[in-house]
Image 1 (cartoon, one colour):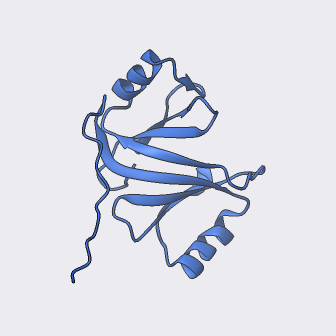
Image 2: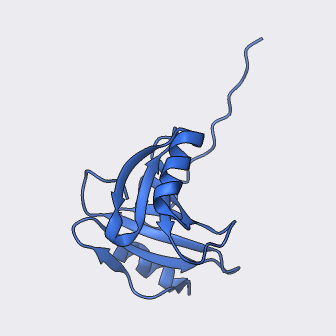
Length: 139
């Protein structure tokens, strides 16, 4: 008897174009220690690190999914921010704003790398949109 593997359905009726990447953003108190922990304990690999922003991304065993580690003084355990890669952040944001979605400030850019904006669901859970500005580093 063969075992059936169920594949999760993929959303196809989206109001804007996603780029197949998702980053789960996690706040950490010490970026260097966190990088070592994620390497040693979970076997993740460092994709890149931006010291000036207190940020890095770690690759997972799941294609197009990274864990983003952001150094912060006020770590709130259990609060993660899934970050959806999109092809055009302006189009995505305009659509969400048309649905009265609340944003946390303007879209900002890390020059030559990525454009980002944070928004909230009706319960206050945070999400981000990210548009990669380079082919070398995932959004």
